[in-house]
Image (cartoon, rainbow, N blue to C red; front, side):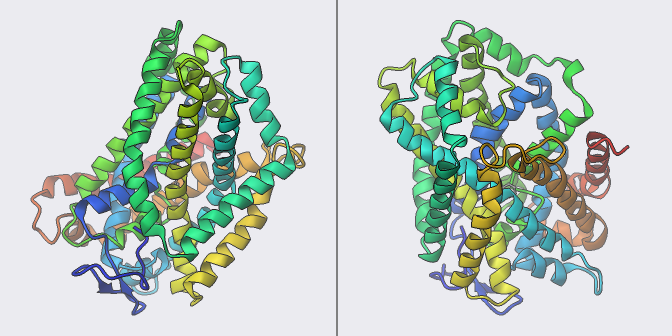
Length: 468
Ligand code: TRP
């Protein structure tokens, strides 16, 4: 997916970009789908979705999340991919090339780069926990259905500053190595083959979880909305999650769009990615909540939720320990794919805009993340008392990126397509120059982008942040 100028050419897909670098597209339609899915599916599905659903009251949150995905997420994702494919460059150059002269829409791309750093600063720490859990699972010390045992195991990891930092640095060196060796394609090939196994494992976990005593309580929590729990801040969190899970609002999908083939059906690919992403989250939810209620975990446990409940589910299966190792290995791979896509934005911008070589751009990005990320890594130890609005540095990065930066990016991307780029050009991109007969759909999406999504995002943000 992250094919760039120096990687092997795919016949018929290369196009010179604005900067004169030959960009090389994805080779097959399935490759596009798999790569885009590789960015969307990550710890957002396995970690963030369950913890936020638990913390925000369950089914009501899920309902708002699905609505936000349909009304805001899908249109913005289609907008980003369309812009990227037409611009064929990094987000800043794309927006500069497509905007009317003198209008500073490229700032969306610049903001996206900052957003990428903020997200990566805490995401790399969650990936660090997942990597650490591979080793913990091998040792077997965490396989238990006793909340006290699994909580203590997770607590021991995050409250140890050295372990937290070293695992995070390990993750950053690993990802940097993949980028520097130019083997992202190889990694994606592996991801593509292994993800079906993760899916199977999730289905197995669901089956086990559903057979537990209080499975019904978990299902009620997940599927029977209690509307009194839907507050303005719950709505904002659900919308932020929709942005985060679809990797939109900061240029990732625009960058991916720049690698799309010209005959790729953008609306169809987008809908498929969204549907698959939603399914995987639902499986994660069904695997976790029945266990939460059966074994007496707290649904509101926060970022720890998955790490403390998953071992309890595996403790109920024969060969649970081995399977749990497999689970965390696969989760690491899914997380690596998502992280590579996040890194792609700063790396491509530093390469194409600032003129650094790709290796230098990669090294600089990693070096910055080692510094920035340490604030998140130390949030539960050295910096535990260091709070902003009552939140640790980790929580601030998590909250600000999903609930402020991505939605603002989304507003401006929608406004750009709706008001500056216009229906004609959007329609050309979405219909492959009129070859697809999807005019009605395009008009509906355009209407959402021009009027509905920006207004909705703004209102949700202002209300959710209590500014209005
Ligand atoms: N969507 C990914 C996940 O669910 C995370 C991610 C990758 C992301 N690229 C992004 C989030 C860009 C926001 C923006 O884990």
